[in-house]
Length: 502
Image 1 (cartoon, helix red, strand yellow):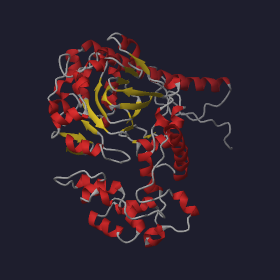
Image 2 (cartoon, helix red, strand yellow; image 1 turned 90 degrees about the vertical axis):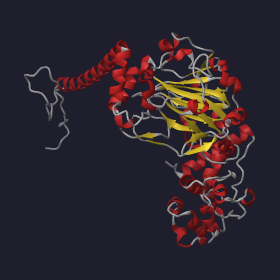
Image 3 (cartoon, helix red, strand yellow; image 1 turned 180 degrees about the horizontal axis):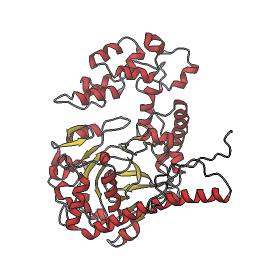
Image 4 (cartoon, helix red, strand yellow; image 1 turned 180 degrees about the vertical axis):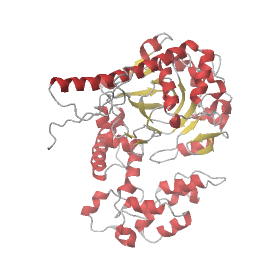
């Protein structure tokens, strides 16, 4: 979802001004000289007027049309005038070309256009488009160069995620399963914390392919990219098979292990049929994840090996709406939010920081953050980062996971294709290995269901009793129970007729 141009411009100006004050950093000039749309009101010339029929199209529609062109046609159109040249150089268009038709061998040249076309860095931005005014072209550049300090510093005390040295295996389930927190000690004991850096990883795994969103690149190529990118939303290396690829050993005598406080992961009952659960994460400054909840109602921990990450989080409950700027479909299967983290920060961070339930914190190298089941969270790297993360099912949230697998099968993710019924399989394995925990979780689910029924009945009966006490007509009723069937519920639709015209 794109923000309203005027709304975003005001938010952007305020944030950029604050960022410049806090960090002594100003947004540089666009490489082609393109300026925000508002500057057109005082300009004596606008290059877009020379674009023929294209000049009448809103910029968003023009870019949409350009998406249907192939690379040769796009270059040809861009040679007709300065305005169309600037639009034809939009990086997202060339990123799509590259991903859909990746060359068998390439050298990263700093931009998607230069890399796809094989042009040297020295020819970037030689044509001046300083009299072209477009938020669609300028906004991605602005977002990619806005300082982050204005958003990640001076966290209000009430919002701070609690920091602790460590927790015991008894303290976590008793006090902390529903709260985010940062542990500062456990990760520092891992061999990977002591031995990993980008340079060390390159020495051992340079030619190993890792998944970075939609591409599989050798680590060497990805590090070249992350060291020289100006993308608004940089590609994020997020690899689920890293343990096998890197031949790591997981456990107390291995390369890393699950912090003791998190206890047993009940998804482990599925053995090799469990859904994807652990990932290696590598990314440059500004890379990260927009607002989401972790899959299958799981909890998670995220351990930073190198770098630092800013987190902003919100609980989920009937009393809390989604985070500002995030819109969720009725069945919660679709989430709409600004296209990039920077765009959300510019438009909604101030409101979010003042929203009840907001929690914020920075997780530094050697620290691990806990994400409770169901919590919304956005994370952004404040510097080049290496991290490990794992989703898990603690006993306290087993009922939530069972309910998700059963009630939202279309949203279940991460299982292999041969697992046709994740809910049934999980129940079966729990019955074999943890029958007492399964019975307790099912009892909890039944209790929640009965509680919802009781609240509905109390609401309906209380409304009817109040009407009778006030002498009001009961109105129209659609009854789903016979009067003599006292074991069924009478659910009525009552219409107040006191104000109806005769």
